[in-house]
Every structure is written in C-alpha cells, then in structure tokens.
Amino acid sequence: MPVIGQKRAEHGGWNMSAAKDPRVAIYCRVSTASQSVDPQEAALREYAIRKDWTQVRVFKDHAVSGVRDRRPALDQLMQECRRGSIDLVLVWKFDRFGRSTRHLIEALEEFRQLRIEFVSLTEAVDTATPAGRMFFSMIAVIANFERDLIAERVKLGLAEARRRGTRLGRPPKKDLGPEEAAKLQRERAKGKTTLRALARKYGVSVWRAHSLCSGLKTNVS
Image (spheres, rainbow, N blue to C red):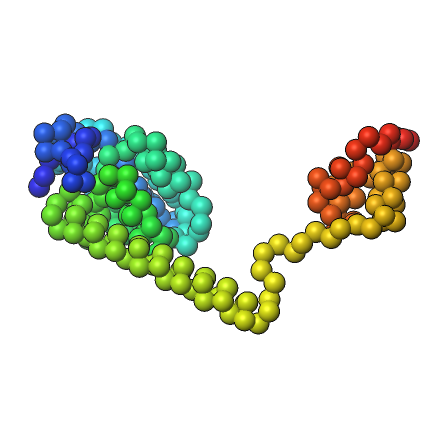
C-alpha cells in the first residue's frame, strides 16, 4: 500500500516521501435512536490503529436517516475537507456515508478534486491503492457523464419550451404610464406604504419605484 501523507505528487496521488500520518476523519451514522454508532466507531478506530494513524477525528450522526438532505456531522466533515484540514475519510460502508448513489458520486468526485483519500472498510475500497485510484477514475467518469446528461436534458427542455412558445426567464417588469406613476408617487408621499410594497402592487422593480419617488417628501402620520 502506498504511503499516505499530506503532500501530493503532480500526477494526483500521494507523495511517496511525505509523512506517514494523515489527518483522518472517521464518519459514522445510524438511522434510528435505538441503534448505536459504537460498533462502527470501534471497528474504524481499530483500523486506524493498525495503520498507525494518530491524527483521528470522529464525526457521528445519530438517528439521522440516510435520505435526509442535512446531516450535521457530515456537513461539518465536508466543511473541514474544503478547509484542507482532512487528508483521508474513513467510513464503515458506502450507505453509511452517501444519501444516494448520486450524492456518493458527487462527494467522491469532490474528494478526488481536493486530493483526499477515501476508505470504505467493509467494501475494501482504499483510494491510496492502485485499485482505489482506478475506482476514483471511474467515479470521475460517471460524474462527468451525469453532468452531461443533466445539461442535455436542460437543453432539450428549453428547446421544447421555445417550440411551444413558452416565455423563459423572469417575466418583464411593466412600464408605468403617467397616471399610474403619479398614483404610486401619491401613495408614497403619504408615508404609509414601503417602496417594496408599492413595487409589488404596481408590478415594477423596487429600484423603479425608488426612482419614481426620489425627492418626494413623505408625510408620516
């Protein structure tokens, strides 16, 4: 197994001469309050000990469903990764980490771009190994394929909307005639209605309402 350290080589892997003790983030999750993260944590800590990794932090989400968009511990872990304070993420199993296949692919692609190694203990995936690096390459290909599919679907949707004559984008703000502009100004002068409320009422932008009312003296009762 290649040496894991904090400095990367130009080809994208770990520098073989770098330090052997990476900054490791262990992530554990269980879905219900009746479950415990302790078995996961114990197994992952034991693995880190066998590797002689001493810089270990644990992030735990307890009673958090796998399909929830927000997970406090996972969100914190990702923030630490983006700050550059994590070298390796260690998990018990893919489904403990990813909310969905798509989320897993996106997260692994982000790790690849951040030069962060990823280890799934039970699936025997270790991106510090040649097989693991090949796995990361496959993830990158899948992520690019997914982005291309989404972009193609968006283009097709826009083309179909144009074919049907559907207006795209925000609806244009209308231009007030002299009478409506004067009415808006009178309401503003009374000092009882905000510019935002007037803009919404007359269908113009807040900036347009401000321009029309600039210089007016308001009477606040």
